[in-house]
Length: 189
Length: 156
Image 1 (tube, each protein chain N blue to C red):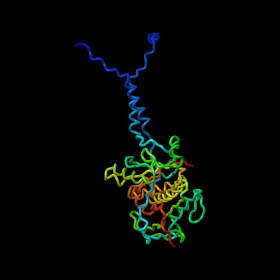
Image 2 (cartoon, chains in turn purple, orange):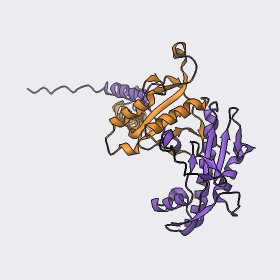
Image 3 (cartoon, each protein chain N blue to C red):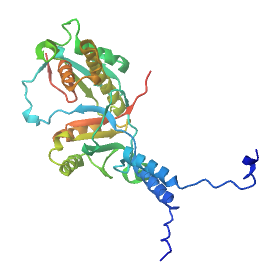
Image 4 (cartoon, chains in turn green, blue):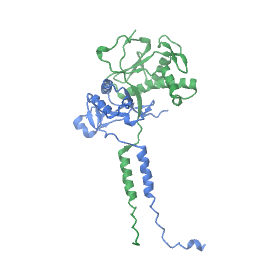
């Protein structure tokens, strides 16, 4: 009766914990998935394609990537490095150039009535285009729009686009929509 | 002075290991919280392309993955060297993508379904033909929200 219950040895506790630790080290990953977020257009059956949705030539920014991973932007050969500037010029159209896209007046919260571009970027590729090049081009196009949004956020709210409220971001997104078409829209003069 | 020399002749006491389990448990909890389980064993080699305009995939439970790339060396005898699609743990064809998306959708609760994202993990040397075909299938399956998985480019 006077004897104590012997203590459970805890020397192996560390080994057990180590085993668990190693199990988790092996079976889990730490990498955060990130990538270019895009939205695909709705699927439309071939016979249902509406011919009324025609886009004027000046409102469309055609980027072609061919088999040799070369770029053809609006009919001219281009380098990927220069694409961002060209895209920004197209989407913003600061001098209301007649060859660049039209604008329409639109009521946007916080901004009042502003001119919003009607421009659409059309990205087309050959079947043999390398995926890496395609992503590089996509990246520049998305980057151009992000840059424009950033500039607008800075000048209007004095803050980075990332730091703005959801409502402010939405307003900016309305002025510079991310209209990158990955299917082939019809182009008509 | 003699006060300090008293124990001089004796051996050093062993370092107590009583706190070792606590330290290891701390590490364990850190890894349990900060990591996620691997979804699949990769059968294809995927070297992601580089990009700068990245957005993070936040809700992992809403993401379904499609891998495309050259099969690993041990599968090349059977499947050849041409890039293949991997869904879950198996090689698949383009025509299987739609079923896969449907199955993925079925596995989620109804209120989560509109927020599902498909992450395309495609090797940078793949030809666009196969990617375009997948995209068409995704459009047919109405899985329109996609993410071209890529690595952060360190620049300038």
